[in-house]
Image 1 (tube, helix red, strand yellow):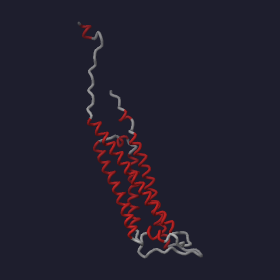
Image 2 (tube, helix red, strand yellow):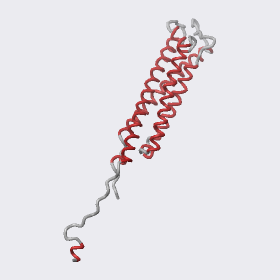
Image 3 (cartoon, helix red, strand yellow):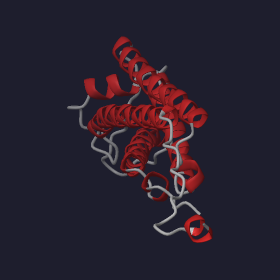
Image 4 (tube, rainbow, N blue to C red):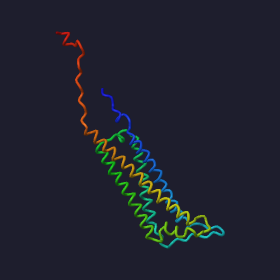
Length: 214
């Protein structure tokens, strides 16, 4: 019975690198989700906040544009859930084993994830700068205004900016993951196309059976 080769017996180092990158993406996308949820909580919670003595409320535009925040939050949340599912599947040997059809599917899915991140970042940046009433733009414009309460514009401004830059980091990690998938697919194609050496027939030793029968 032929012994398994090193490539099939041990997971390739690129597979381990992808698992580490996927874990990083989970952390980064989770951080984006957490920060944006907190800013939305400040926006929503301020309207029903019971002010203490001496506190002044935060004032938001009558039609605050939440679209940039919701777009970035939706993509980050979807990427967070998808990354957890991919990381869980990566522990299965059948999922790690390179198969040409599966490699193509992984590359297509990875490309789709990168496109979604880029689209979310562009939409967030364009809508946030185009609207003075957006959550990020308005809070940054009034970040030096002290509401003298439990919620401050400065906190919303800083968390919106941090979420945007962390999302850029998650998108870059997704691109690197896609590159490792492409490398694995190329290596798998090369190994598949390379013909396997034919086994040499067993040679009888000196004084074999034929010699003894002669």
